[in-house]
Length: 454
Image (cartoon, rainbow, N blue to C red; front, side, top):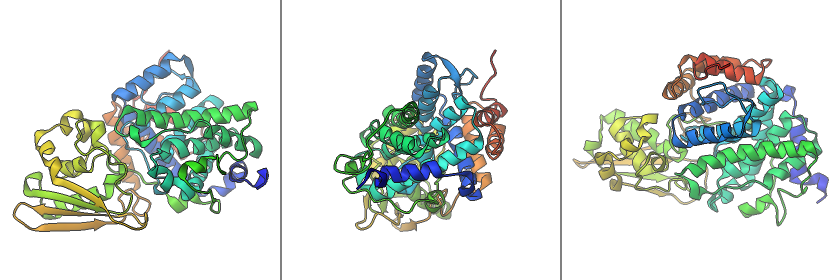
């Protein structure tokens, strides 16, 4: 294969050639919603230990032109530190959006880097929107070919595939040509890392921050003149080998609408959400509480349970990756909220005692379509069952504008801000001519999250 025909070069040519006319109104709306959701979830994490540490680290590196979303002040930091810290912060709660094809979180892997770079370079909302669409295209193209085996081997695709998407997005934001964009992709491959062993720890969020840092740094290095191998993605020693197979790119274009963004309705791992939808429907239909239930069994589509590695969680972070806790908390409390994942809430004796009563297994067969079936055995004998396919908040059943704003408002209030900032931020990010940094700060200031300092 010639260098010009490698997947790296094919993706780079698409990214460099993507212009405003090829980004549809529907795609623009998705990007604006993604920005609101990602920033709001980051603000909600403001008082989490990992968020505090990330902001402390960023401030220690010196002042710059970029905003820390949850800092509570308008002190600026350097672009790399903002990209990294906001990436960490926005992933701490595991409440940020997902795309199933990636088996990961696309927005948190790209938007912190894009918004930091846009602030540093005084670029517009339009520039960020086009760049996001370009980065998502790369994420989706790689994911179609390799995400499932890559993830099964233990890689954290948000951190690995996400870093490459972030590099492509940042390259487009900087308007790098196709050759430099190919180098940026290759330079991201040199930095892409992160495994699922970190799930339930601060390191998982650090991996999301690292994806942004790697992507931004790769684009800046390529802009400066650094090169990379044209076979960075494919071949025996390329990135795709980490997924165990050859890289075959799909037709490029329209990935954002084809695969969609799935905005989380509940603040825990997405692998629990179909089962949560089902158990909450059963709870509502039959007036159930934890005291009425003898046992719960979740039967899920192949691969659906892979991220859920904590079966007896003792902390809020553990519990975000526990089907057992998800079922127990839903029966006890109703729909999980941010407060459901405090350490104290997780350690409630009644819920801890119920955890062994929840079991889960996977069916055999194809990974897609995804589904989950929940069977609830009542103490007086009957078994109630319900299967869910479409996911509330997913591409097939997206949150309405009002539901999205309600989630964002809850996040801002939880993070110490005011609900009014959610609508202001969404409106600002729907104005393509507005400066991205100005739009971001307008939303945060409307929500009284940032305080102007002299």
